[in-house]
Amino acid sequence: MLRIMTVTQDGDAHELGNLEELLNMKEHHWFWVDYNQPTEEEALSLEEFFHFHPLAIEDCYHLLQRPKLDHYEDVHFFVLHALNQRNLAATEVDIFIGKQFIVTFHHEAQPEVDDAWGKMLEHKKMRQRGRLYAMYLVVDKLVDNYFPAVYEIEDQLLNVETAGNTRSISALMNRVFEIRSRLLKLRKTIVPMRELMYRILNTDRIAGLKEQHVYFTDVYDHLLKLSEMIDANREMTADMRDSYISLNSNRMNTIMKTLTVITTIFMPLTFIAGIYGMNFTYMPELEWHWGYFAVLGVMFVVGFGMFGWFHRKGWFD
Image 1: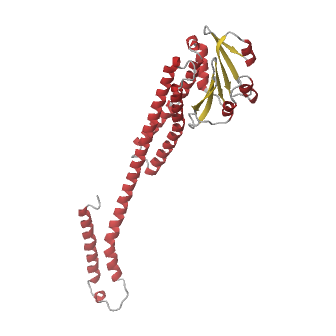
Image 2: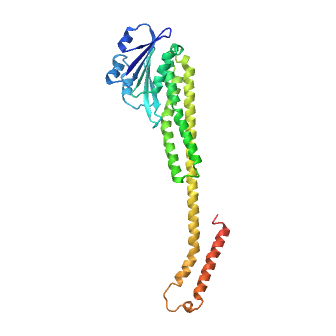
Image 3: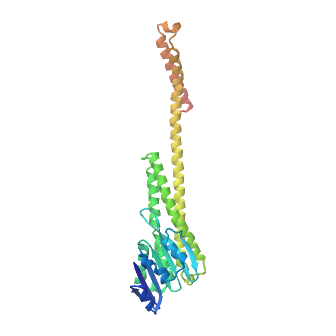
């Protein structure tokens, strides 16, 4: 679907039905064309009507590009990433900025673009700020949509911490690694967006950007905050992973120590039982009337003596 908004010098907005009407309209100050899930025929107008650079058009067709900024003479091309809240997958949103226009291109429906479009239609003051402010609205909504996913992961980490005494180590470890995987997906989206926003703030090739600089700085601050939150959460998951591994190792050592003590206690008892289990004919103790009870007594004394000695050494602590 193709939708077109033109803005006059006074800030009045008009929606047009096709690009031919845009050609016939001479009083617009700037305009916005949104390619929302365009057909192949509609996408051809990127070249036939706007004459954008072939490399930029190719980037629109081939998903998924890394967030970036390319300058083509008097047109600036941006690749942005939206976030799918269900699976944290990134979807591409492309923006062309010219002297009098903004063109957005996306293969999937993007509520962030729809929200920015609605605000520009509704508020005259926003329209008077120009095409770069329209771009800011899109980018701001894209970045704001990252926060719920990060907050959700923080809640999941809190649940893992509180469930430490009620769930098995194996289940907790699996949950921690799952959260780390989700954090990695977020990081692959947020960090390149932060680098892109840094480039936008420090370029001097986009006309009119200085007037909107404070707005894009605010978006950059949000991306910095998101990056710090992700790094902090990754460190937390690393600490939790190390703690669970240490706890698991400590439990294993305790079990092995207990089994070793039991084995050590039974070693002399097994030795005594093995001696008197041999079927030699001439063993003097075999014919002794109290031999059986004496051997049991010796085994009892040896077993409990070793148990008491190990306990005194603290091997059962």
